[in-house]
Image 1: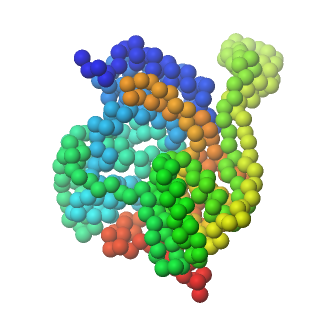
Image 2 (image 1 turned 180 degrees about the vertical axis):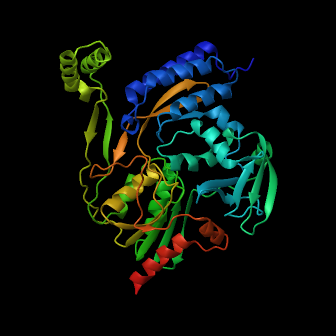
Image 3 (image 1 turned 30 degrees about the vertical axis):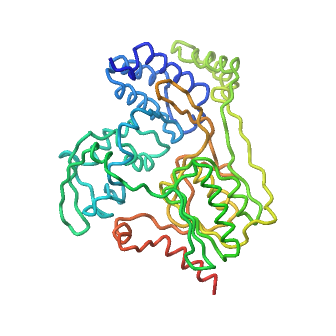
Length: 431
């Protein structure tokens, strides 16, 4: 018997912990319409009683959590993730109504190659089947996330593609081969001069390691006399909010998100549910319905209450960097990456170039389920400082350069339009 698998009792216990955790900690009810947690939970119970393998159980949990439609609520199974490679040997996204390769280790599949079929079926139909396992705050984010989940793909499959030159290619992808191949990982951090002594460049893919912020601060010191710094956060997956780095760059006052988190008023919640249940009686006369509805409305605020707080303005440091700042962002910039961008967008300290960001940040509550399984429940919801919605929307750039198939095809020629646009803006400021 597989010792890593879960018994029926363990599965039910884990499901009940998650169900209770959602009721207590989930902070994104605002993003759900006509959502019935009890009904969804009952569906989960039916499925896990039929699950034989650990993977089937994990996928059932993923499907359950994905119904919350929140990018900071997810299932992390260490054993499942370690079994599969970090990617499929290529990366892709949904661009201009096509599934398109954005990066590949196989030179035959250059950026801009269109993915037409997987095992003889369209990529769109494959996505429609698998999207129920992907938790995200928007449809755009859900589509962009498919490439990050090799475990949703068969262990071996055939892809059919059409290259930018019009050539049709088929290739068998074996995840065992991909996993064992020596794939060079993208650098989490890169810093250099783009124009010696005048324009610095810092690229950060992940704020998860505290050493990354330390490196960035060291390079800001190196660039201290530069006229400008470009921060490339395209593809940044988040991590820990780089508060010290942000403060080092702010030469004007700044603020953070407006935020909310759930509260619990058990007695008042009981009264709301009591009157709500009474109103379900179809035999009530009109006057009784009116009276019950009034009583329910008095307690409606306690159905899903939350604590809300605004950010205060923070004063800049006296020795803050004084030059210009440009930030590059795209649809995959998320979480702590968006935390970094937000104050610069709000107070216009920087020019943001690229695409609208993913639109998900916050703090999840962690439920340790044992045997390498952890479930995260988003318990903090962020809004722009003025209170307008952010989750599922993202931060709009000042200069919008949407990713297109044409841009991807040019990128292989080392023509990075987003970066070149930033350089053009900054060079004008030098003159």
